[in-house]
Image (cartoon, rainbow, N blue to C red; front, side, top):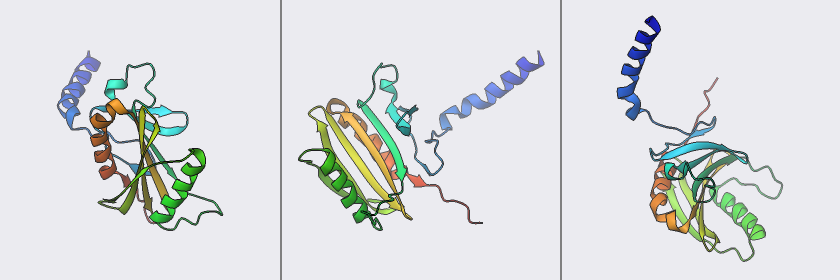
Length: 175
């Protein structure tokens, strides 16, 4: 009986606050605000992937409208990526090797915290558009890759813009 009363109190206290809880991507080195109409799932090749709730019950949601978050440090003798421009050149050279006659649209933008960022927009095939966002901060490169079927692109690209703006590298405490 006491457990039921305590559970009832906990539920009453939490329910009014549920709409104010902010979903954030659960990662150790960066955070991003997740729109309400998106959910987070684990994927074998990436730590976390975001996808619109609309696709949650679909059997195959790959490439319908997903955002992949990747952070990495380029450790290569071929690339001394000290600037965001170096990261861009390195990434474009990788795509040129992977895609025959790689065609893309390049957008230079400004992140509120990290300054200049690059957005590479290209078609994976005739049905799919991809956007790769390149962000650099203190020696690390961050890739946010949005992949969407063209018929969903306009619906979800606005959410991507909000995620890019909310992207923050978690600063380690100074000891």
